Image (cartoon, rainbow, N blue to C red; front, top):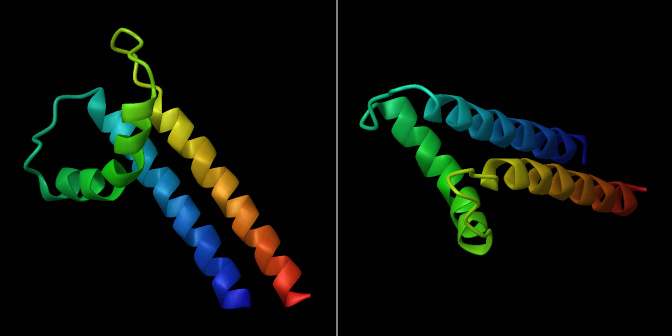
Length: 88
């Protein structure tokens, strides 16, 4: 169970870092064909894409990364709570 706990925490943190890195990269000119950029988009787009489709257009302000960070945190807490209930 401890391994699963650590896996969930590490996965959530990695997703948070990927989302934040993508946000930071959106503020600077970067080659979209760069392997790191393509990797970040491949990881984060399945999370950010559906949120963007649901969120209203706020005149160029993209709040989907903020919503994604909140959802990842909530999912982590729910999974860890369920894991704790199953383990004990």
